[in-house]
Image (cartoon, rainbow, N blue to C red; front, side):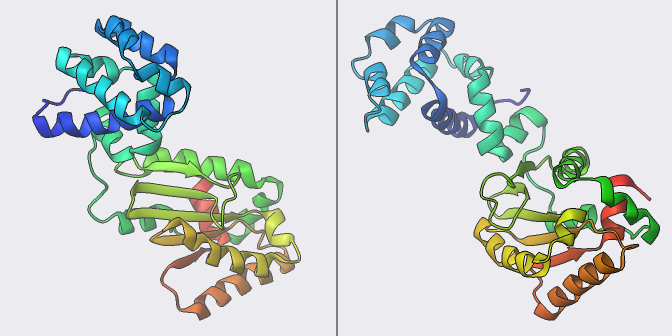
Length: 265
């Protein structure tokens, strides 16, 4: 963290740190912070701070804000102590990606044209049809992990990459998020998924369900084997059905493109 602090920076960080502490701190965390900042006795003697935490009382957030303010009033250098706390930093990384990026990654905003940045990353030059046969032995989760790793390494602006397939995904396996209004989703269909009897109906339903995430766009990535006649027909049919929707929200990424994205030409 190498930025010069002004009052606006301090206020933003205080608000975020307060949210992180309310969400994650235990009694022991408060005592440890008090010890590190020379305010342990104040923390112990506060009439409501630790009791309201223990009892999950409604006034705990107010008491926590009082504590954060007091600790920083005692020494503004204590801000650095808080920003070295693993729980606080972890919460910021998961819940306030722009602020985390600004202070820890050196990036404060998404790319000016994050729509184009996302599309350029996910929409690759098609590879050879024969290569798609390689999808036969690659499972859904393994493919998604390859995509997540590449997204973290290659996307500009260091967006938050959130796998959602195990969290009642509502039609989305992965969310790429720079900010609340800059979110993009990926629905990945493996060779096994394409082979299921209800592939078309299920995928169409998931496309509609994905809108719950507040996405700018959804990319449906089809990792089917185009050397197999059935899989070729099903993936081409899905692309045709989506095209008929005339909906700029959803893009179907062909197996040849998915292969290039994940494994190169």
